[in-house]
Length: 246
Ligand code: NAD
Image (tube, rainbow, N blue to C red; front, side):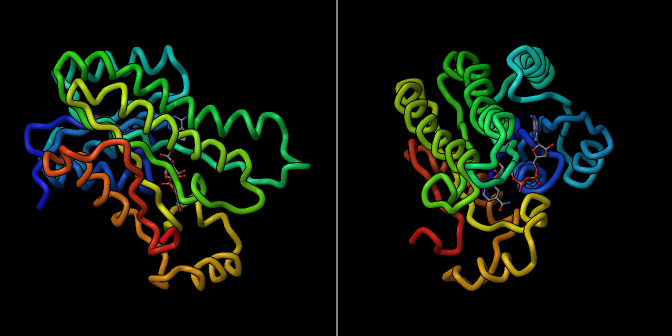
């Protein structure tokens, strides 16, 4: 079992899906966790802290908004005393073919999926650099590596996350901070539940491990990258995709 006792983690986009499961797994490994979503959810934090026996607090914050992130991260550092782990997970889709894609569909996806990673990482970088330690894990996607029609905004945002991950890893390596990305394949969450059933079956047939992934599969990879055991890994993209990108 991965041991994160004594660590503090921030997980963005943690009201459901991969982010919620990541918060749950990090807390189960002993970390105290600040969960961020668009809306504050004290009931969720209470449920996690009472079932897992560690401090979990909920914060409402648009992670693409610099002012909101500055205020929220300051409050988290003051409340928890320090932050060891940042999981930049929040993300959205606005799929559509290029010719029909509206400017706001492109801009919103880049803002929430890519700008947020820049804004949140910058907001924690000074704190982590001062402590000469930290773990940053960014949620990329198979679609940032190999993709399909109808996702020019999403694919661009996730390829951007991979570039940002590698550059930030180089910038912070000398200060004991690792920066890695996880690239999930097809994971069963609200995000993918929107897709037509026949499309899901088609995707499933093309996955070497012949199954969709679960949020837990992704959360376990995040927990490993957040642990001391991953101390010599930085600037990497870990696929959790059932072999799709093999
Ligand atoms: P989801 O839609 O179930 O949850 C998204 C979370 O992000 C929610 O908690 C929502 O409140 C939060 N969020 C959205 N916009 C936000 C904002 N501006 N500020 C703060 N929080 C915000 O999504 P999911 O399927 O759990 O995906 C999580 C991450 O994993 C995303 O980055 C997604 O792109 C990535 N991903 C998912 C899959 C998949 O198959 N589900 C595959 C590859 C990558």
